[in-house]
Image 1 (cartoon, rainbow, N blue to C red):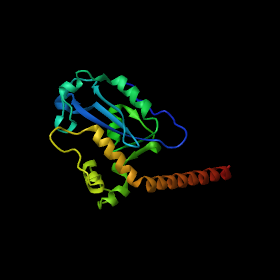
Image 2 (cartoon, helix red, strand yellow; image 1 turned 135 degrees about the vertical axis):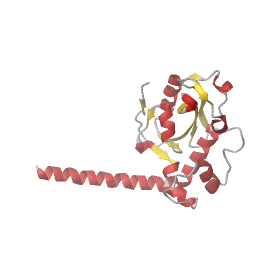
Image 3 (tube, rainbow, N blue to C red; image 1 turned 90 degrees about the vertical axis):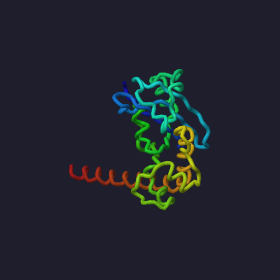
Image 4 (cartoon, helix red, strand yellow; image 1 turned 180 degrees about the vertical axis):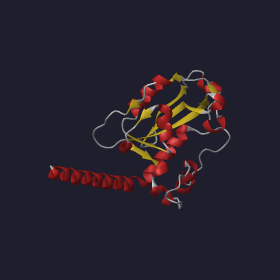
Length: 203
């Protein structure tokens, strides 16, 4: 299965938040495969939410966590179709929580400069009163910062609910975090320029 690259985008930053639910395939459900993907806009509007048929037979629906049931996948769309649809939407800045896991099951590579992972933004941990280097769950951050409860009950997670919570968390620190990223980018460019000038002088 060919992995996809994110299309290049021009103009001002546009954000979407993405969250995937996974089921298990293979012996004892040891492999993660995509079963649902939800994408919301900066404003929290749902622009994509579909059940997706895993490539391999499901051996563990993980309903307690994924919220996925056998009947949900009876009329699910094929993985290849879903991947193409999702790549078209995510050709911009993608916000997610531990989003490398989502990209992995999507078989998709998104540029780091266009990725905002709320599990790796120290400012959020600070606002939650937690160690900056700790990988904090989305549920815990949402409760600490937004004063909201998510992932409750026995029905499993909702990728729509999680994507919306992720975007809300990002917006709390968006201004400060984007300024920091811009400063880091300018600093990296300055270092590259200095190194290039040294190479020219060496010749």
